[in-house]
Each structure stands twice: as C-alpha cells, then as structure tokens.
Length: 178
Image 1 (cartoon, rainbow, N blue to C red):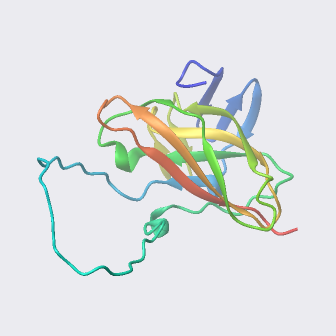
Image 2 (tube, rainbow, N blue to C red):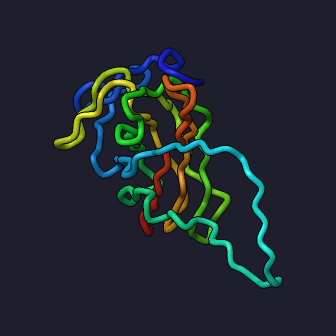
C-alpha cells in the first residue's frame, strides 16, 4: 500500500481520518527530520595505503542522536505518528513509501512489536502545535500494541518527486512502563 491513493484517508488541521474514524493529531508523536541531506558525486579512484594490521572498532549507529525520539506510548492505546520530512526534501515531495521497518532497540520482550496501520502520505497540510507541514511532506500512521518498557526504531523508506533522492524517515518510539 504505497502513495496517496492506497488508503481512503485525509489529514486536515489537527484531525486525521482513517477509514471514517477521526483521530486527533498528537504533538507528542511527531518526528521532524532535523538534518538536510546532501549529495556529492566524485569519480571512482583506487586508494591503497600500506599499514600494519591492527584491530579497529566499527560503530553500528554513530548518528543515533540525530534520530528524533517521540513521547512514550502506552501499548494499550492507538495513536497517530507523524514523520515530518520537510527539512530533508529540498522542495521535493513524497510520492510513495515501502513497508515500515520496526526494530526492537530496548526491552526484555523483543518479539512483541508495535503495529503500524493505515500508513499514508499527507494529502493536505497538517498542523501540529505551531508547525504546519505542507501536503506531500509527511508520512502518518496509526500505531498500536508493543511491549511495556520497550523502545523501537521505526524506519519508513520513501520515494520522492526527485528520482535521485529516496529518504528513510526514522524515529524512536519508546513504550511506557506498566
């Protein structure tokens, strides 16, 4: 289910309607991308440096601090998550998305993942607090379930009107303790 036409839903103001059910847009579950992307193409060249063998450390996620963290969610509730891509689109708009990828980051129960349903690209401007997101610049989804005390990384691969730019919108969603 990708793109605007995949789900009969529309976002306007502070209410999101999914399949005839209205949900409030909650500023606690809002993730704004805080960085701008850049692209630099350089010709390929061979690189070789003679050096003695040595051990080295590869940090798996060195940029984790750049991933926004949403407010803790109670696994018994259903909330609307909003992923704002405005800062990284550079004038492009989101055109479609792939299935969201949810990874358990923390918690003793790593098999119970939250469920994202009714994922859409906003087809109308959405206002959250004092921020208005233009149409085609955010992905919204209903989130439910998960495990108490867990923390999840949500990644949504997207396509844009710029065929050379395919961002992955990310946010960390912690779960409340019981």
